[in-house]
Length: 340
Ligand code: UFG
Image (cartoon, rainbow, N blue to C red; front, side):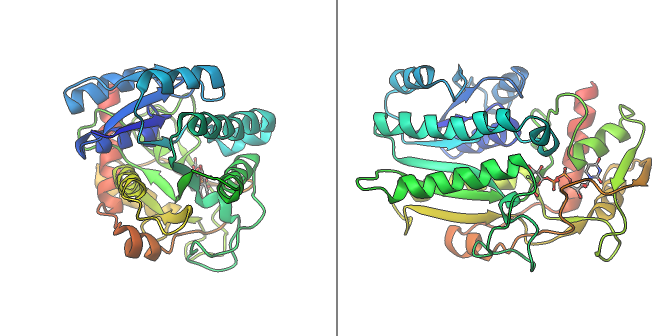
């Protein structure tokens, strides 16, 4: 069994990827500092997989602690690096914290991987690197625009760092950069899902918490955008579909099939949905009536973005399987399980 270290493996996308890795015959090992995740996730993983997933309680900016993980784990085939802060608004308030954590952890990880002779990396990037694109859908060749937040800038900087490191003489690092669109939903077992700490920033957990009565109402951030119904358009991808893209990427690296030392893929459905469409589809999928009001635009939001998913389909053979309806149904099932 090939051992794959998963930084941020107790987080939302990380935990779903750990499940898919284990079920595909890999040996996932979690590295997480639990600053933005809960230990209870490990129990959910145990229930799904029927065994414990090894976990190191380590902050990836701590080089010595990370070195010790690699030493203890021995033969590591590759790393999937999720660990990062991800709240756009918070990054505007605390930019230094975002640069230190998101950029610092990547630098430390690459340094420690190099020392340990581990050369395969899958990195969590984001469609945020495109900024406000001039044309849609965005392909991997769409020029990146200035980021609309420090968070977005950390993702751009991390991509640049990977490219520069990989271009240096004697480089041993092979990386696949996955640019995620908007992950939603939860595992079909409802044993793991998104666990926002405090008031959710993202649309779907806000919707499910409103339907559950935890929030009074959803405020839709603007309905006068230049889109068919005036609300923002995003590409919502089910988190298990997104998790599966990582398995394909890891396999491609291990099989030495990558044609470049750094490859980049959009991971989305290729379809855009408006906020109102998400709300309406949620109401159908959950049977719940949602209390919502229109509000002002949220600073930094781009009006519309969705993926051209052709490259991932052609090269990785990756296609999403879950509809928006089923994704939202899974999010609701997860929310209901939290209430129990
Ligand atoms: N929205 C609302 N009300 C809410 C929350 C969100 O109307 O209470 C709207 C947003 O304005 C946006 C859409 O729902 O139009 C989706 O918002 P999210 O916050 O769920 O997602 P974003 O598209 O803003 O952000 C996501 C990821 C980021 C990433 C970004 C890149 O969460 O990590 O995509 O575009 F940087």
